[in-house]
Length: 460
Image 1 (spheres, rainbow, N blue to C red):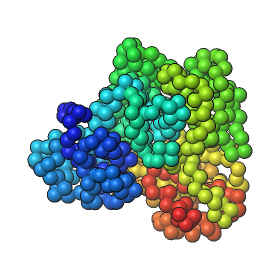
Image 2: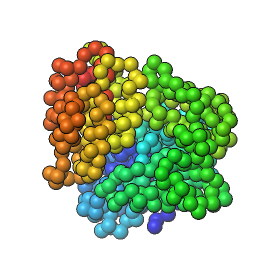
Image 3: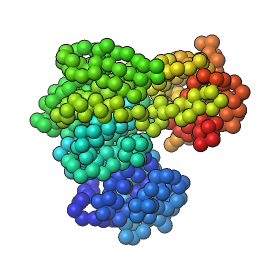
Image 4: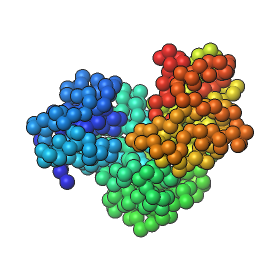
């Protein structure tokens, strides 16, 4: 595998440079003095930002974008071998590595390299930790899988030996990383277009934990998981557990929620009160995300006052129960939830948020995920008073006709739920304007472009 020499700047080309993670890595190299080019299917805020920093960005992926002066190419798992640029790379014999490999090589240059993994909560927990590290004035380098207002985007380049990044399990990407501190938030079935079953996913997370150095590595892991014992078996690194149960090293006590549904609780450290935490985000799931962040911060010997300050200052990552505005007395919130567990957590959190009736516009993400969790989606969505379904967002997949949103609709109707299915965003927007009324809460939910519905209603 090609090894990047960070003391020697070379021309690096990114296929799919506008992606959240890819754009962040490109910015790190730009700020390190590397000539950077790249391509993407369409222009975006990310590509425009990179251009302003000196990158050469081509819109449209063509073989002609692969010029002879390129020394290294970086691509994602979404780029297939028939991609015209990747084909040209192979023909020219230019070295090429995956996004995960580049992330791992960057991570290997830091003394404290924190990787946040888990089926759910990676972006939120990475964002919480970012706030804590900044409050502690550790000047970290940060790569987060969403836009974080505090750092003005998805990347921050610091000057210290602390690096924080999300660690994604899809296609086993996180096995290319070099963490010294690894976080495992939860392990559930997902990405079934790649993994065969839950055991294979658990084995992948076990291998991720095994990447830690034996003597100096730190694993921060959810001790409430069924797979906990399997994952930590035979590990020689230091292990900190977090969760709701009092058997964990870090757990909550005296949980309360305020009028906005935000969480407040005592942080218990091995049975002793550490401090009282106030969160500016709702839901029990965010309490566990906060506990994971606290455990990491304690392993870095960060003062409790900085931890408290960082947590309370975090008001949510982009598209994570994000308040978008109010129209006609209806509050519009957007959320990235696209797995049944995430949907359930978001809707339970919404129950504590002030509202009259709850409307959820859900956009299923990928055909394989929809087919795998059809009944689970219906169970989770039934927590909403009213459900509006869009067509499935295909992402990287082709429609084989095996599953559609109508299948979720049928299951919800069997449960007696008020559910509606429309094929266009225009129809959904008109339906919302005709049926939602004052003090209702409207959540646009999914990992695709469903956010546009709320933004168009608000005139954003």
